[in-house]
Image 1: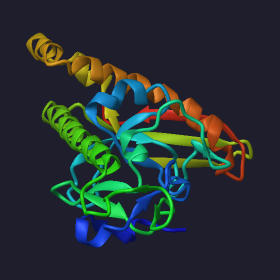
Image 2: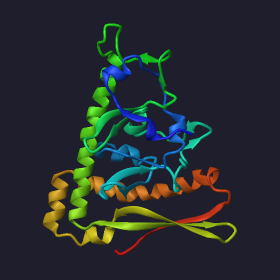
Image 3: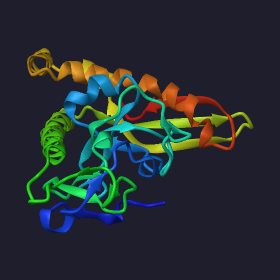
Image 4: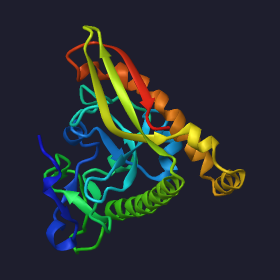
Length: 247
């Protein structure tokens, strides 16, 4: 199975002959249990996935993500190479392209099954000009970069207001054993309700309050994770519970 170690900065000299095969990268998708999403995606993404916050390994900053699975390397929404979802986040739609590094520059996964030199859509014309397909990709990732920035600014507001708290997901198996999933965060309803009215009104005017409630309510999609996760667990999950700690 490939990983993202084959990621490289996209540029005309290196990738002039690259063609892109249409469709999501199934091999990569099977290995990802989450992707970062932009702020405008919260409403549609919450119709399928739990939306939670995770800490970036390098910076330690919180990132808003759509959760696909409860274990590293497992995507419960990909079964028999088919996505079991009505919405695919832009970061998934854009594969094999990614935003990489602190500056979120356009990169390409050269090891992706979607990267070819003899099939798919060309990125450059014979004369070296960018094709309509490449212009479409650039436009999509420019939007995603701005949207992720908005999500990061939104998350920074939540951190400043001390609203994020760890959530523990407990899997109880039919054989009596249990497993604790950690590393996920969400918005504390109790801390939200304790905010000053002026702060609440300010978030409402900035169209942040609706995003907060969408994210909080999306935890109900953990039930869907339980339903789909039978593929990744060798024991039947009898019960899945989500508990917020340190309210």
